[in-house]
Length: 214
Length: 103
Figure 1 (spheres, each protein chain N blue to C red):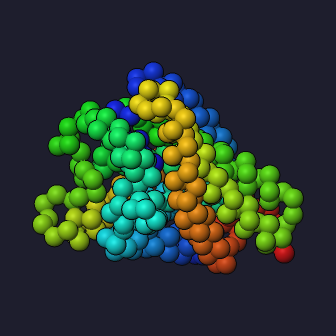
Figure 2 (figure 1 turned 90 degrees about the vertical axis):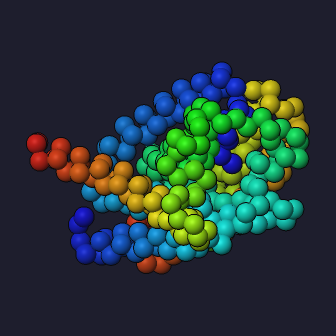
Figure 3 (figure 1 turned 45 degrees about the vertical axis):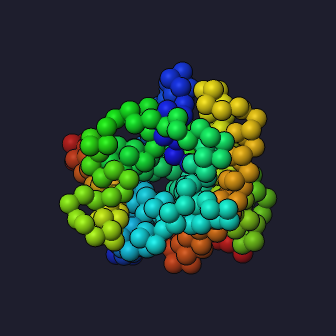
């Protein structure tokens, strides 16, 4: 869902850029409070892993593909603040080295996939997982948070295209959320798989989870 | 890093990222992604602009220049991306260590 340059106008690029910069600054400030060598190492590995997983486009019906965004994965394992930083690094490297996502549109892409993708998914995860400590509820929260993060990110991407006058707002919103409702299933499957693996080998490294799963 | 187990976990993560970026990425679907597909269907894909010339990018479109073979173009692009990101956090780690020593 990396928006290329030309799809968002200058006012949209600047306003999303300002919000993204503020969100990133707040996230860095927050991360610094629990900054330890271990956290930095985990953030680096998570960022590299999400970059790698984002390269794997999977096909969905209709000649379309999708790939992991990773916002929910990073948020649930490392917490939302570290998650934002992890995704922002991926997006900056993609935009400046790999020409993936526009330079002017970078603020919009950070807003959709890092700020909304991370905090949005974390909110859903937090709301569901606080109801019970059972394993089923935990993985339901992970799956739903990942799926919703993709759909909501695509909603905001469509909103930005609509505001920019790139295409009619209503049609774009419907088309974008519709197609990403399917891509989001892939996001949920990959996120659940990776978190299930971490939960098996090092459950203590899922930093947002307090106490053992029953 | 503290503890041998953490070290092992980080190593496993890095190896997994390298395998995915270098060897699984070459099997990725080449269909347009969700946004591109919507832009094609609705007919605004041609609004995409190249603001910065392609030659300014180190590895445009995940194609590692200098090699002919398509497999290695993608594979080396993946390797570069993983190493660049690890270098960013490696730098943060070194700054953190250096700052800690001053205290």
